Image: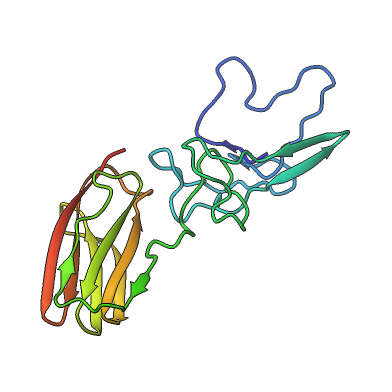
Length: 205
C-alpha cells in the first residue's frame, strides 16, 4: 500500500514475490509495467532528488487506511521519510511513496496589521536564515499600493512570486516553502511604485 516500485530491480528474488501459498495484494501503489489492484498506477512517478515533482501522479493518490481482509488493516504513517506530516494538507489523501509533497500548501501566508501605519517602506531579513525548508519574510508599507515579492536563484531566474497584488498599508508577513528547491543562495526582492529592495537568504538541507 502506498508504495513506488520503479527503476530498480531485486538482485536475488522477484520484485514482488510470495512464499508458498501466500497471497499478494498490492493496492494504491505505482508499479513499473503495471500491477493489478485497486488504486494502482503504472505512470512514471516523476521522482527527483528524493522527492516528487509537482506533476507527479503519486501526489494525492495514496490512501490513509486499507482493509485487506482477514483482520489485516494497514494505515499510512503519520509522517513521511523526512519527518513531514502526512497527508499534506491534513484534510487530503496522502501521496504514494515515502515522500509527501508540499505542492498544495500555500506558499504565501499573509498576516496584515494596519494599526500604527509605518512611516516608510521596510524589508526585513528573512527568519530563520539559514533555513530548511520554510522561512518568513516581513515588510512594511506606509500606504496602499501594488506590490510584488519575488524569489530568485543565483542565475537571476524567478523561482516563485509570493505577492503580486494591491496591499494595504501596514505590516505584512509571508512564508516561503522551499521544499522542492535545492540548497543554495536565493534572493527575495520587494518592489513598489517608488521602492525596490533585495535581500539574500540561504537554504541549507
